[in-house]
Image 1: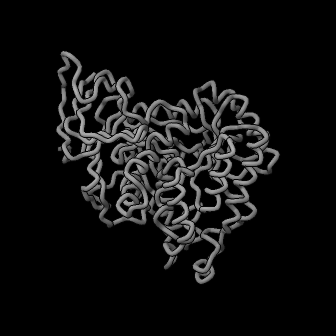
Image 2: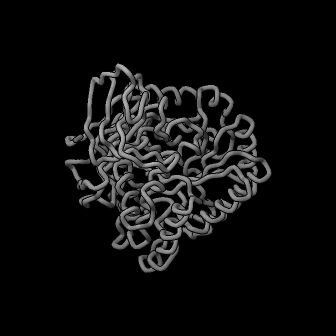
Image 3: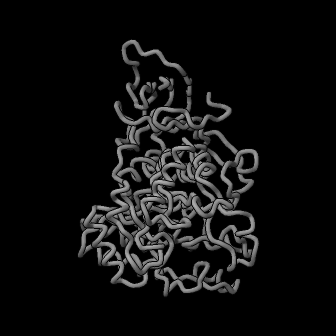
Length: 429
């Protein structure tokens, strides 16, 4: 394997909050030394990255890769390329494929496709229920045997609280992490946007904040009885974040994340019936957005994800309520997070913690840190460099981003997975 030297970078390890100018030396897929090379070390490739930040590779807890079954939207290969361009070295892919990820065979197919792509690492999330129908439990024992450590029903509803209880009990038996996207289907109904003044003015059916908080309260009550490890994904209300934060302080094994776009956009993004702003959970109020930002800063929310959902053009070419929800977000994840640093909402260390060691701790994996002997999954980026979201820079098959045409700050120069350069910008220093 290639030996690499990264020279004169600003080494930032969110795991211990340290920041210093340092060289990084890589061999056999691992970091073999910091600051000084090992005796006799001769690099095959040398990168002088003066002024750039060397960070652990980003870990994205919510990504829809679309394959198998929805290759007209995107593929594992196309979105893995987008991931490494955005500095994401590990991603968790949704079980909402066709067929759903409810058998070892589908898990193995996703892994094989990811290995062929040879870009980011892919962690398949297994289906909580058979066919994601929300009625009969999946064979979690078989999924665990296939190497699956995480299960979820994705954005699909579970039929009733009893099935939730049985599912959490089953998952706890095999120490599986359960990912929950909290939205009570009966309170949400046919809603498509936040229930508020903008929805009323536009005449769109709304989803009340209680659709999220009621779902969170239900799962927290079950976790208190059963003890299952649960991660709440893509929160949209500051009230839900506070509830989960209180549960953590009381010792419950729960965690949460928020999509980067929910830390920037509000219900006003749907003005003009813009279908690009059709997302689930919906964009909510300024108070919720600011409350979620504070929850991230305070550590109540452990991770920031992209909630990447690429779509073909036709999926957004209809009246608002008939369009498919979701935003393509892998490539803007870093820039949107760094924007919160520029606005003084987060420190750089806290921002990178939410992209690296925070999600790593949720998953219980060894990456997310830069340590001698650790896996060399790294991202090198220039926090001051600008780039424009557009055809010349975009890699994902999904163009459905509300930030199209905007100039963003924070550019990935190099991405390494297992010590191998899998992405290199045209200006890698």
